Image (cartoon, rainbow, N blue to C red; front, side):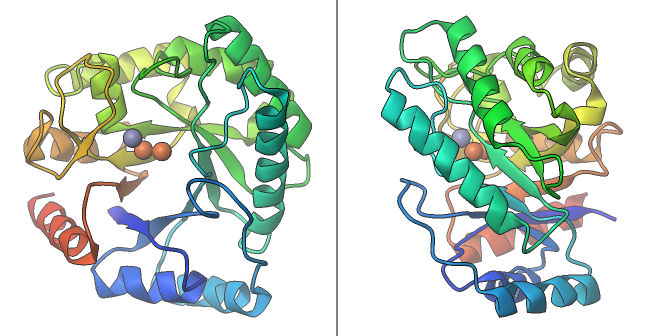
Length: 275
Ligand code: FE
Ligand code: FE
Ligand code: ZN
């Protein structure tokens, strides 16, 4: 069955998100673990998390995706920023244990002039300090657009990070359609080729989630500006081909398009109808 949802505000807690996604026709969702610009997270409401676990089970809400704040940069040149990244991720993963068996996604980071090799080394070092053998969350590296000094716009870079992580059975990848388009992977005209490349370099078994966004910019623009489905360079058919692709169809799909709830509801309905 198609697993589709969108990014939701986490301010009302898990039960609120669970009810909200059902009310707009979805069966999974993504949320920020804390303010996307960083800062402290609210303490976990254990009763809310427990209620959500049974609610999700009863209502067929599949695996959900927690997204780290954008300010998390494990390969910053500034040790204080790297330290913040380590503490934030460790805290997020401890909190995720209240909803075990789900996914945690983060942007690999920006090396800010240190070079991609040093970036990869620092990101792997962060993961080696944070991952715990007994955790119940899979940690995903998101494929990036290659804006500025972002690490992770090439599948090879993602592979190299994973290779350096000791507990890499806990690692996976989240493919973002806007980001890979902007990074120069032609998912519109050669989706099969891109997925074959992903399999060759990273391995399809690592792919755990897909962000379905249209892009305001053409192939290879290295921009990262999300667009509503059908209003950008990927197009509705391009997104539907991604959702129907045999290597992807079993994965959860998350909209991160520039929308309020009503817009997400329309996109979910439209994609389900045409799927
Ligand atoms: Fe993201
Ligand atoms: Fe994304
Ligand atoms: Zn993005």
